[in-house]
Structure formats: structure tokens, C-alpha cells
Image 1 (cartoon, rainbow, N blue to C red):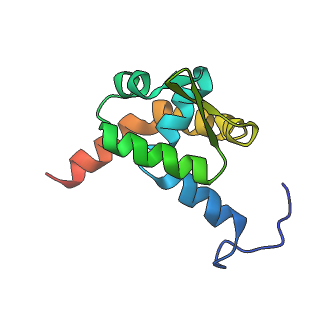
Image 2 (cartoon, rainbow, N blue to C red; image 1 turned 120 degrees about the vertical axis):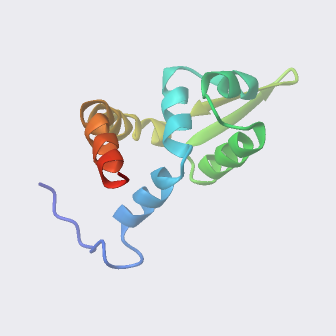
Length: 116
């Protein structure tokens, strides 16, 4: 396991920044969608169930601000793609996705058992 000089309990810890980035409800979904291929805004809205155009725009801008997503405009068409830095999050997001497939039903089952 890699040693880190910071502590997750400190405000400037890089691990806290990583959690802040992916803790947003839509960030990981948008990053995962863009890992497949660059997409236009409307394509992302169609691909990601439940996200509004406004929230998608906000999420894309936020991810651009972190240097994870790039916006390309050509001939009046705008496309979004992962940057090299954004692609480094694909593997961790895939691991979370696998965890959700394996344990998501257990979490839902626990939630349902505590609301009875």
C-alpha cells in the first residue's frame, strides 16, 4: 500500500479532493459515460437517465474546472471528452460500479429492513 504524507482528516488532503469530485450525484456517471466515447450534450442527456439539461451543464462545467473534461466546439457543434487526467478516474469508477453490482442489493435490503 502506498504511503501518503497527508491525512484524510486534514482539510488539504488530496484524498478529500478526490472524494469531493466524485461525491457529486452525477459526476461519476458523466465521467463513466464519457469514458466510452466523446459525446454531445444531448447525447449525454439521452444516455444518462434522470439528469436534467441544466444539471448536466453544471456537472460538465464543474468537471471542466477540475481539468477532467474538455469541451470542443467545431462548426457549431459542441462535444465533451475526457482529458488525460479524467481518464485516470475510469478505473476507480469502474471499481465502484463493480462494488455496486455485487453489494447494491444488500444495501437496498438493509435499507428496506430498517424501514419496516
